[in-house]
Length: 289
Image 1 (cartoon, one colour):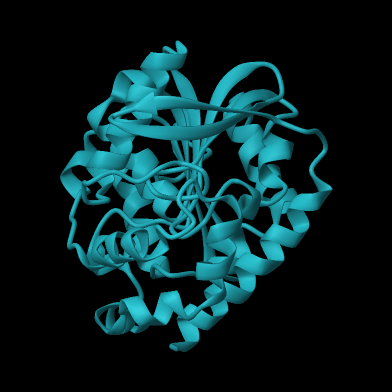
Image 2 (spheres, rainbow, N blue to C red):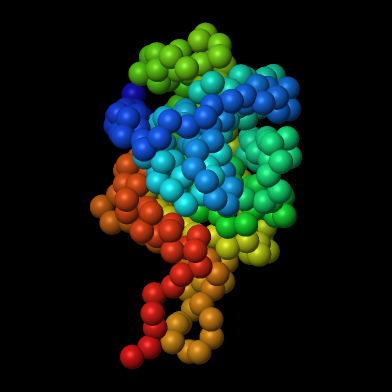
């Protein structure tokens, strides 16, 4: 098992343990979306927010960030195709497919437009949602994701081709999956699809540059993508200009978490909210002397 995969598994267990500290019991439900039974949980009150988890994860594994977001929003936390309590279907897991599922979910439950928080696979799903269905996304919190395959760290790009089904079926993920899954024996099929998703090349730079949706990019300083990639994305969105010139700051923002790997980012909900809260509220630090 690769070091990257082992680290991911350990961090996932820590996040799941932290979820016990959630502030309220959310309301769970299922709805038919594109032939699957999609599981989702609703908590909090306020403007709607969609929360999208990472690959091989589920809602509990997102930890306390869901409960913290629910302090200011009505949060709809979704479980993606084949993940958690959502059933699988005979279809590849791709970012356009996942984004289409979210758009269909919003139509079915009557959400016209929402803020979106996505982590890892969920970040790319949220970005694809903003690209393909811009009318549905108010503001996007893009956490630990990439907009181009070449933006992944070289070590990650080297590891991905080595991923195989046995790595995951012999991991704690496989046993944990059975606890919540609609089909307890469905892990191998889902895992194969996620492995293939990770191997797919993508390059969305031109589409990112055309976005009008405000995006908060959050990454760890030792994340799965390079720091240069996060900065490049910020620049595509109009960021990286000099402030204090009298011109308004760009609507999009960039936050880099110190001493944080990919899996450490989601384990810091308090720090995340220090950036997410002002972004969603449209607040900026005071400028001038």
